[in-house]
Length: 262
Length: 330
Image 1 (cartoon, chains in turn red, blue):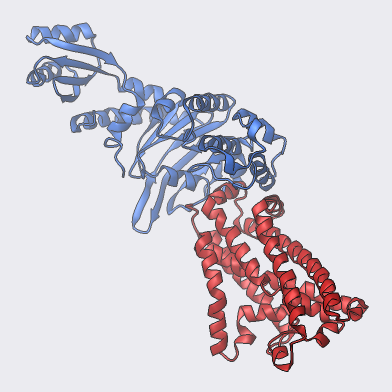
Image 2 (tube, chains in turn cyan, brown):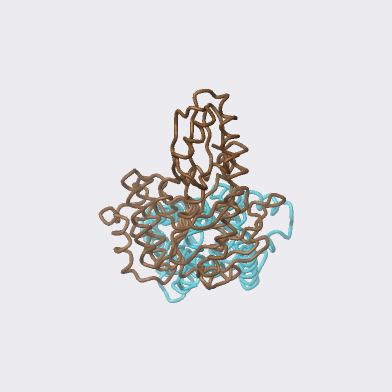
């Protein structure tokens, strides 16, 4: 597994992969922070319920943490697409057969690759957070929102906790992307399926009142937000890890059983 | 060539040679040995109870028409697809446990496959890391295939021939005991093909067993020691290539009038020769005894004037066509 992990780290140096992963993560973070601060003075109780932050919210000690979590809203899409593309491309390019000859233990290969890619995501999330914090500091000055409370021990603790939560939620999205890739074995089909997942889950969530407690995407978001109205943080985290392990277990079964004809 | 008569007689000859050479197999140490190896995709049997031997230290040519089951067989040997039934031993390890032998195998299957965004060197680094191979092998194999000057270029900028050479370099990376190559000469120019032939010979002479599947039969004939011919998933022939070519030696004779071909065939048959193909005033038969002069004499005594008389061996290409129904797609 360590060999597969090290090998994956060499692969993620590809320029398009770095640009395609970090670019959107950083861009969405900064844009989201700017929009949040621009809208803050308009946010009343109705928009607060919709998840937007008011000026008063932003000035709280966890204001920066809230900004960070909201700025990472698109992160799940990026993670799931990255994993679906990366695994499925091994089939598409035919590189999987090279990898399996050098590492016939398919479970090791799959898990090593997973950890290699999740490392990339963690680095991307960390960099995006730094950019988000810088953007937030600049925007707080522009919008004249006090930020003294952000850099207190309490504020920094909330920020660190949010960053960890974002990374934990990424594991859930990553496992779904991996499963889609192993099932569809084609980058186009895998990405199409994971992108279709979002509106489909949205529809199910609208129809099923218990959706926020059980649907994977809702649980991952609950983890990222440190809990939600529908579920506690601990429950969301436990179910997210359960869903991730189940997805990887099923993916591994398929990966081990399926012939590599590509 | 390829007539029913030719096929039936050739098959009889080849069957005899399979039987005779089977005595030699036992004495050979095999790098690969399959027993009733079978692969079916649903109801379609692609490889059908295949029993092949790849002797150690030789270059073995694995030939057959498209869809004959060559790539499927190679994929099974490399653990990429599972067998439906049967067994195989590769470098002493069971096909059911590819981990036991794959570290000593290098392969290039169905064309080169690399990450286009990485350089040639970078792609080899990935494989070296995955296989716990010495990085110091990378410049050596790149030099072997003549890619050392372009190794830092992205693979996306490589021509097909360069990718093919990189594929061979990747296969050589682990210093394999067994090298499995599927169409290694694809996309290579004539110089590259000749260089590939030299490389395969050199690798085999250094003790590596080479199993090469290719449609470049003329090239294979120059480099292979052993030949395995399959069609429709079944073994048609395996044995030493030189012996096969020797055994399928034939003489071509031609007469003025195409109607005389039947008379000439009867005369030769009476003299104990075996015609293997006929048509358009020409007759090909197997040489088992006598000389071209004695054949000429027989024809003359029968009042037939020969306009052509050539003796020689069949090529691997001739034999391939005869054994695979003209090389038609399965």
